[in-house]
Image 1 (cartoon, one colour):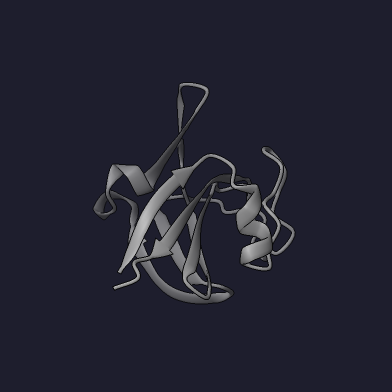
Image 2 (tube, helix red, strand yellow):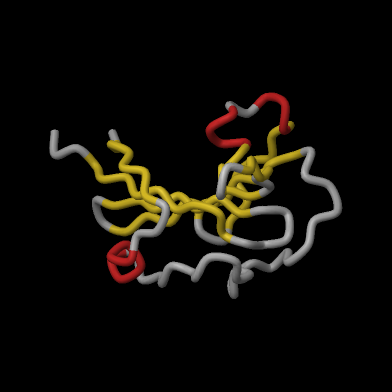
Length: 109
């Protein structure tokens, strides 16, 4: 079981997950799909492997949107990276910009 700790930017996670967080507003270097014409579906990845795709309307609002400066931005891609007892969840816009990274820490039970 993972416990979520939502953070807008987590610098320590990059080293723990062997990934460096992106500066806000920069396209992801490992994002193979830099542009998506429609964001009516959200793609879910575990590292670089596509796990599932779900219709935008069936995904909860806290996953579907990220609020930046008071504006809700649609999420088109969610990527999970796991290392040890930590998992980083990254949400990307249709144009490949990382909008939010959430750090989850596995319970010690």
